[in-house]
Image (tube, rainbow, N blue to C red; front, side, top):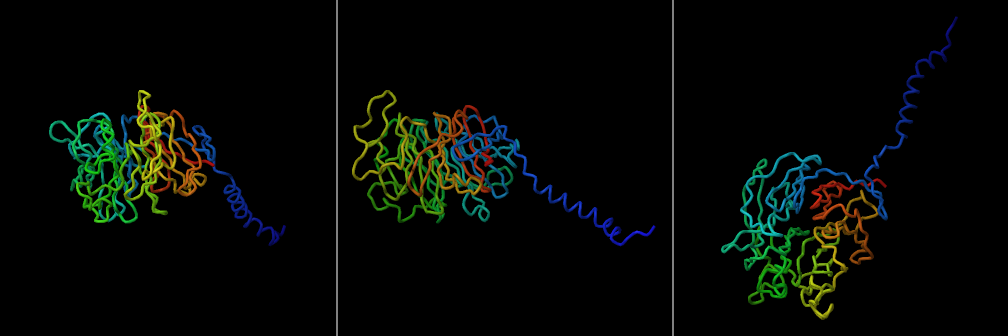
Length: 386
C-alpha cells in the first residue's frame, strides 16, 4: 500500500500543529487569583496579604535599592525584610534613644540618590540633660546590618520633658531638600505660634543638615532658621508629590480637628488659634475656626480619626486610586482614602476597617502599597485584583 505525500506531511505536522494549538489555548486561560482575603472597596477589589504579625509599635518604613525593606519599632529596633518576609535580622549600632510615651525611634527614609551615596535618614528622640528629650535627625550608612558613618544633622530646641507630640516624618523634594515635622509637645500648644522654638513646625534643611538661605525665617531675629511652616499641632504624616511639586501633611488634631494640609513656604496653619477640634474633656480650645493670615485645611476630620503616616498613590497598579492620598488612622483603625482632584479633596473613603491602629502606609518602589499597624502588629501588602 502506497502512503501519500499528504499523509506523511500530516503525520509530520500534526504534533507541531497540535502543540501550537494547545499553546494558544493555554495562553487564553485567565490567571487564577486567590480572593480569600479580598476586600471590595468603592473602586477596587483588593487582597490584603499579611506578611508579618509581630510588631509592637512600628513607626516608619523604607526600601533599599535591592528591594530590602526596613521597618522601625519605636522602642529602638529596625527590622529587615526581604522578598516580603522578615529575615530575622535587625540593624545594629543605632544611636542612644529617648524613649518616652509617643517618642523613641520614629521615621526612616533613604536619600533620593541612595544608589550613589548610600545615606539612610532617621528621626528619633534624642536624650538630653535633666531627663529631657528632643527630636533629632541623623543619617548613616550600612555595612551589612551594621550602621556606620553616623552624622547627627539637627536637634530641635528647647529640650522637653513631655513624651507627646514629636511628629515626626522625613521627606525629600525634587531638589533633595529634606523636610521633617516636629509636634508642639502637647502640654504647651502655643509653641506652634512661637518662631523662637522648633516645636509645632515643619522644617527644611539640606540633606547634610545645613540651613538653606531662602528659608522663610532665616532673617527674622530670634527665629529658628530651619522653620518652613508653623502652627502645626502634631504633624505625624508627610508625603511629597514629585510630579506636581507639592508637600502634603496630615496633622493629628485634638478631639476632632485632624487635618490634611498643603504645606507652603512660610505659612501659618493656625494651631492653636484656630481649630475644628476641642479639648479631650469637651471644653473649647478656641471659639474661631478661621482667621486672616492662617491657612484652612484641604480637608478635616470631626470626629478625629487620629491621622498618622500617609502616601500619595502614583502607581499604575491602582488606576482607580491614582492621584489620591491615603492616610493612616490610629484611633479609628483604618486607612482613609482622600479622593483628590489635583489639590482639591472631593471626598473620603474608609478602607479596611478594624485592621488595627494604622501607623503608616507607603508605596514601594515597585508600586505596591504597604501598611503597618499597632495592636494587631501587622505588615500588610495591598494587592489589587480588579
